[in-house]
Amino acid sequence: MGFFDFLTEDIAIDLGTANTLIVHNGKVVVDSPSIVARDRTTGKIIAVGKEAAMMQGKTHENIKTIRPLKDGVIADFDASEKMISMFIKEIPALKKKLFTPSLRMVICIPSGITEVEMRAVKDSAERVNGKEVYLIHEPMAAAIGIGVDIMQPKGNMIVDIGGGTTEIAVIALGGIVCDKSVKIAGDVFTNDIVYYMRTQHNLYVGERTAEKIKIQIGAATEDLEVPPEEMSVQGRDLLTGKPKEVKIGYREIAKALDKSILRVEDAVMETLSQTPPELAADIYNTGIYLAGGGSMLRGLDKRLSQKTDLPVYIAEDPLRAVVRGTGLTLKNIERYKSVLAK
Image 1 (cartoon, helix red, strand yellow):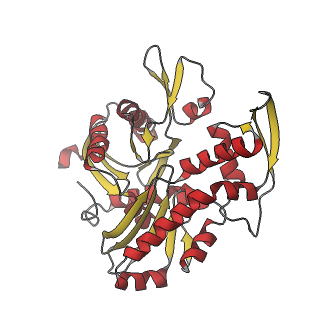
Image 2 (image 1 turned 60 degrees about the vertical axis):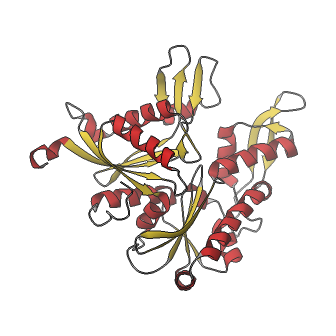
Image 3 (image 1 turned 90 degrees about the horizontal axis):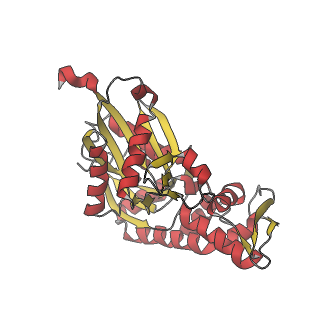
């Protein structure tokens, strides 16, 4: 390589169902929603990321907003490829270059992904000028991002609650000992809120509004020490068809999300029950680490802690734990060679 080194750039990508983050030179340079807006008449992509997210639920028939990733894997191949390439073009350092450099990438993938889905991610990356493409499992990247030394002969449990999937894994000696990937995560929570508003308040709200409710007053338990204030929600009245507003509190949202959170709890318990005894002893001492945007749900750590009788810690800046870990892997690629799926 040598002489051509300056033509290669290293980037780490966390290709998420809800958000895509890119790390370049140790800094997060792109942090955008994974949404694409396409013009139906020409088939052209007219906006990606934040711009496309503003259009969501507000488009006319010629524009369609697409979320190219579903349940953590690529659902729309063409749109995801365009999205990745547009995000890469947004990287400030690469904008200044005369010609596009070839890229060395590390991309994270859910732990429950199939060979075919892995191939799709890889092909997408290669088409956007990816010369060397490495894949890393999300819980692994989250563990590295949290600051856990994964190479030690010591068990650590990571629960990464993203947009499309919740990844639960027990990690030791740089490998995943037992894991579970459930398709209950941020998106399901959002849909639960939409359903609750429809059935309890006869109010039809869009996905963006439900997302806002989840962030502002979302809770996993009904007894919070510092409860958020009530929130006014506007939408369409299903009985009269008129726009209307209702006030809701966090307790209602806790009720709405209860069933889904129960399923996450069950998945955590199931993973614990499959853990070898020596590692279970380690987890008793170290506790469970939470990462991903879903872990920011108020009271979730407390609820999981009561269910498992273990201490539960939320990563600092949980939204970026996975991409931080991916970035660190990229930096010390030799050290983490064994962790990567080539």
